[in-house]
Length: 353
Ligand SMILES: Cc1ncc(C[n+]2csc(CCOP(=O)(O)OP(=O)(O)O)c2C)c(N)n1
Ligand SMILES: [Mg+2]
Image (cartoon, rainbow, N blue to C red; front, side):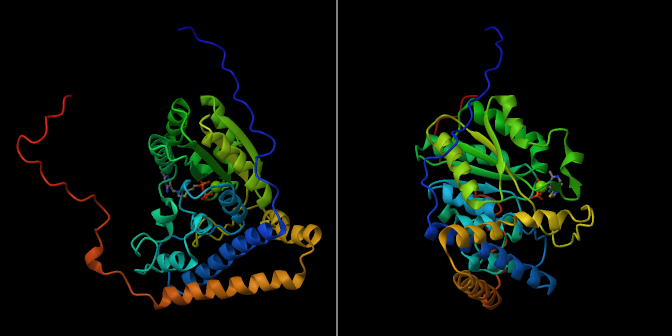
């Protein structure tokens, strides 16, 4: 075989096949974003009251990415995320009650209180977790995509990761194999400009992480992640490409987190005025403006949405506070797979190496 000049991968279609978002559709997306933000504000309050322990990374400012992606996906699609995943879990269908109870470490949490903030998990809605080791979950998403393909489920794996994760060895290996095997996976980088306290231009010479895909011939696109309708369309275009069997896609959504890296970070490394500047493209405000200007929604109607969200978020906190602690007897139940029964002598042929 002789080496040939690489053919650049095709661009995604300019529009996905999804119809434009309706007024009711956008009201729903808006409510989802407000709910994620409100639940996290209450989580932050509970954290400072020492009702939530351990690490807690807030998603406030990035809500449009998870909510737009959810609107682009189908129930059989499986999501794998990093540790800043409260928003993705709720967008994928984990209830605010189950998320808040998990943050509190209660038995009614989506991970039975054994995972906490970084390890939300709910296979019922194909939310395959929350992982704390930066970049390590990217190969897991490739594995999930392999499984979806082998089982002919018509599902796509969507992997959310940060800009910092895009420098890890495991990330590159996952991209390489996903492209080789044309796996149905969308790698969705949420570039929020920081990995802990390190700004993007101090992490990497390349600051559009979707360009990493070109090294393996993968279809790529960078897009503005602040407008939920735009996110929905771009993720839908990628998911449609992957679902059709043409292979994986890597996307980069430009976004921004308002809080520090975790609850213990006051984010003093940001240049002054940067946060205020970024808040001008707040995802909630963008959708509010569109609802009012293009769909004629009134301020009172928006207020009613926010009031119903407040009630639902308050209910999640009450539920978490009143829920029981996990039984310590179950502490190690999910750490190791059960030991298989030893096979009866002579029942199975010895494996050939
Ligand atoms: C392998 C590994 N190295 C370092 C860390 C410590 N760490 C936790 S989060 C983080 C930054 C990751 O930033 P990014 O991927 O951009 O995600 P973001 O927090 O911005 O969502 C680091 C270095 C870790 N958890 N795992
Ligand atoms: Mg980041």
